[in-house]
Length: 325
Image (tube, rainbow, N blue to C red):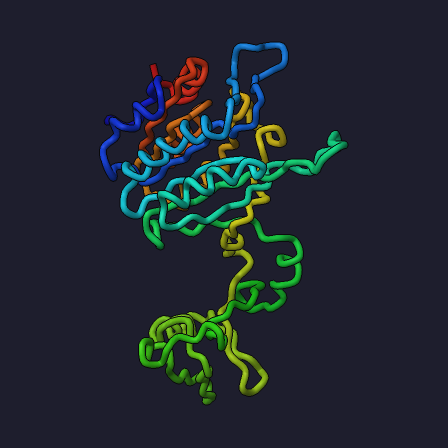
């Protein structure tokens, strides 16, 4: 199947036409089984869809065959991201576990507290199941903003480069590698007449550590028998390595991005997903594309995209946003 296209039709029938192991990333954002009707505005009853199912079995019959096909089209180290509300996570979780070796939930805090909720807890969290056929899929580190407390209290040291925090370069007891399997992690570093030999080994090779010492990027302690640290400069920090809790990406309702479809997701969310799981020229598939945000972000990041949807409004909106005829 060609890439950089938006195709109208049934997701299951269309994905069967995609070549086996030809896709590096799939973002699957199906109906949530919420028993609700979604519309762009209360005045306009035309743009949107009905998330109505007679039973859980009917819902399973919709999504499970698609998940099975997603597994087929994914590359060996590719990833599927199954997006669902926290309230309806059970069925998707069971299906993902059935077809994929590795399933890691990502918790997206899509909104703040809701003052209009009176009789139940406010729903502000979605789950994105990150699924792969192997234990270690393709992965690029992505970053989240430093929290205020960490930024204020960690960068207290200073040298000619600027303020820096301390990063561990020695293993702890529970992390220590085997001396037999990793003898290169156990060595002596000598600096200014002092020898450093951490009991549980170094986190890097001797060559790499000596290069950091040469570049004055190692903080040597004043106290005897203490371990050195790596200098992490505030002005060089891209943020903190991302966790499985995403509270820094806000929904369309709380951001400046214009909404073209009732369940449209923010571009920043798709940007993080695509950056962490693909390289330029990789193929990203969205079998229920809605407003086409997956394609818009993939295109901006120089990835190829394939979008499906059976809603004429979704197809029109996606093609307009992607400047496709």
